[in-house]
Image 1 (cartoon, rainbow, N blue to C red):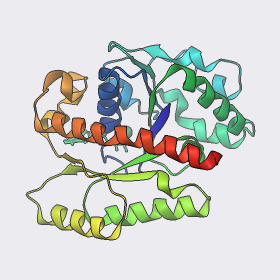
Image 2 (image 1 turned 90 degrees about the horizontal axis):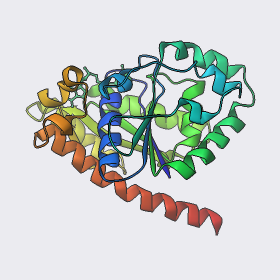
Image 3 (image 1 turned 90 degrees about the vertical axis):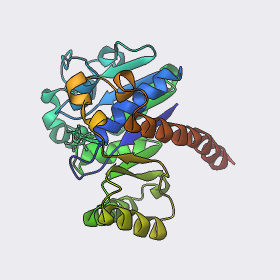
Image 4 (image 1 turned 135 degrees about the vertical axis):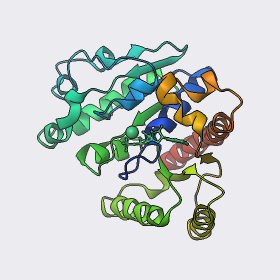
Length: 258
Ligand SMILES: Nc1ncnc2c1ncn2[C@@H]1O[C@H](COP(=O)(O)OP(=O)(O)OP(=O)(O)O)[C@@H](O)[C@H]1O
Ligand SMILES: [Mg+2]
């Protein structure tokens, strides 16, 4: 089981959109997939066409009153389950900072998930919080969408510095470009400069696309209503590229064991 989390503390960069499309494509490939909507805005749940009704907030999970399975629901798509986001979770950070056993709890969640899913995609809210730290520790990869403008490299470096200061594994961070407009000089030159200075950038690029934007109207992954559009193709390329990281991750586990 591989956990990908979509993260950037900058808002509106395509985390949720990417999370929904990638989770859908993974399930479509026949992998048992979980989309975990951790954002109280619950946009991923909305884009998936599902409801954000939650049987109690995550507080029950943190306090160990409810099992993790209680939160997992089947989606309308085969192989795809989800944990809905909910506005009730807006204070989850405050709750987490007072719950010492959450580290342990998260480890046990991870081992539960291992037996049920091939891939887990977590949609994180745009904050650099206690919750984000917990996710950074637990996820195998942190997918970071970047809009190629002046501030993107700065944001990326801030996250990198944060990882170093917390002794998290920086190799987990996988940046990729999102909402790209190739007609803009600034976008092209920013991507070129970023690639020349950063060793590990995902090759697939997600363009700024009206079809992708229509996910908000259709409440569905772009593939389901515009299979052959540029945006749909871009997410398929991204997903193909990410599948290789499963291999990388198992190699890493092996080298840790040696
Ligand atoms: N590739 C794209 N092309 C066009 N519009 C896009 C694309 N990706 C995302 N959008 C639109 O941009 C907006 C922000 O996208 P999204 O909600 O995925 O960002 P986010 O990083 O999750 O935001 P937040 O930080 O608020 O959680 C949405 O209206 C979405 O429809
Ligand atoms: Mg979001």
